[in-house]
Amino acid sequence: MAVKSENAGEVARSNGGSTPQKRRLISDAAAVENMSLISTPMKLKSPRRCVNSSPNSGANGIEMEINEKLMSARKSPVKKKLCDSFKSKPNWNPQDVEQMSAVREALHVSTAPSMIVCREDEQKKVLEFCKKNLEEEKAGSLYVCGCPGTGKSLSMEKVKHYLVDWAKEAGLQQPEVFSINCTSLTNTSEIFGKILLKLQPRKKLNGSTSPLQHLQNLYSQKLHSSGMKMMLIIADELDYLITRDRAVLHDLFMLTTFPFSRFILIGIANAIDLADRFLPRLQSMNCKPLVVTFRAYSKDQIIRILQERLMELPYIVFQPQALELCARKVAAASGDMRKALSVCRSAIEILEAEMRESVSKMNSASAEQGLFDQQGASAFEFFNSQVRVDHMAVALSNTFKSPVVDTIKSLPQHQQILLCSAVKFFRGGKKDMTVGELNKSYMNICKTSVIPPVGTLEFLSMCRVLHDQGILKVGQSRDDKLKRVTLKADESDVTFALQGVRFFRNCLQ
Image 1 (spheres, rainbow, N blue to C red):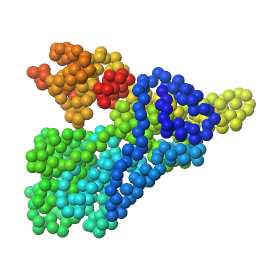
Image 2: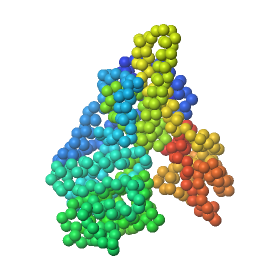
Image 3: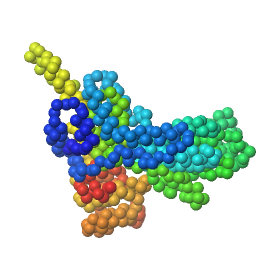
Image 4: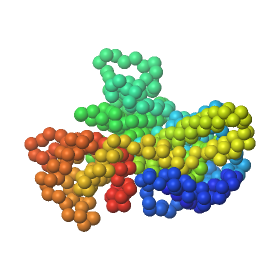
């Protein structure tokens, strides 16, 4: 299915191809007729909504730089920029090794874009928090959460550089910066030793004092902490520090509460309610960290991010309709930008294989006839060098299609409703729930949709069936309602399997 939009239409018209837009859309639609796409058209939002609507102009250079970028984006809408740039851009040649390498690099997850779009509000909140604490020389903690692939880590890297540059321009002492991915730790308590090593590289500890105790003593007395720099700690994959007694995670955040602490702590993880569940004592002491949530990317945001990456290339790689199809499917399934980049790279590989096969056939045919039609080969390259909707459809199918998806599609309706209930519950960041809680969530969906629910015994039977199929995991307990339930299937697989039905699509929104 090809999705028609004002933006896509303008870009397509500027490609210079001789095939009319209508005919191309019809052929694209035929190529993906069997794909289970969302039938309800979604209204495109203005790209302006991805940026701050009313930035405050500041006296310092960093804030002015951010505001200038935002104002520049407003004066030159994405639609007009793309249309103008596409007019002067030729089609790319997938057989050119350098061009192929450049495209793959532009769409790789590890390639950091020069400017992070659609996350200006979140970055501004974090930056303002850090600037205030740095000016007042006051410790504090902040928790950044959100679904995977929503730009959390990338945004914090940008904030780190913004803060250091701002401090330099404002004439303040630049903070020590310590970034760590907690999955790299061999032991969770090792993080305190690494912080101390960054803070005091030449400090040697005696055997009786642990790094944590030394940090606690250091920030308990003014004499020890005076003259020390402020320190920005960015701890990614923070949920890795969750232990059975929660001591490491709690002690890390407690370091920001000591009377002479110099820490600004930013923790990053996926779970939205981590602070509430694992740091209850901080809440009772009125020291709960500030929470900044990164929501899943919408279709329009995914399109804009892909366009920003591709605009740096001097040639056209994707048909606009192909990008929109990718964005629509990924946004409906998970809103994970990493998944969108992966799908685009997969679509490029499909185009590359197709062209390689076609050129091979043309060479064979020309060899048999004793001639080679250069004009025909050039025309073939011109009309087939862009990634089309059918390439993207195959890439999406390969990415999301799995045996689990087929199994979920074939389940009875009430088992599918049960799965929707579980997915909605686990989106809050919780890792498990009781059968009783799952039943309550299931009953709420049935009541809202005016569908008669099944009885308790049949509900328990459905849980066992889904457990046997590897979609749910049901634990052991004497009381059936207290059995712990976890979702074994990937959330994106469940969403992808059920999004073709309007009822389930509404349930999962």
